[in-house]
Amino acid sequence: MAGITDAEDDIDTSARPAGAPRYSRRLSDKILLAFHHACDQADYEIAEQLLRILENMLTRRTVPPDVNRRKSIESLVAAHERLWHLRHPEQQYG
Image (cartoon, rainbow, N blue to C red; front, side, top):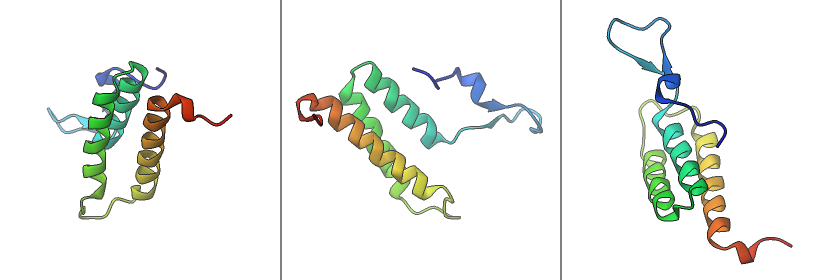
């Protein structure tokens, strides 16, 4: 699947304190990538579990509030739709 990279591609090596890696992707983004990878592998049970984890992360209150919350929730809805369509191919639009 395009867009999935090695873990070291997620590490931002610029301006980091000695011994402390900075990651360029949020954990929620990595979970969403894992969800899509599970869908690509037709492992729908794991995909569903990853969506539950992602939903738990996005619905808890954060301090300070996440500025990308709306985008994250839209991605979560789209992921639920993808999983539903994969599990119900007969219900596809004609």
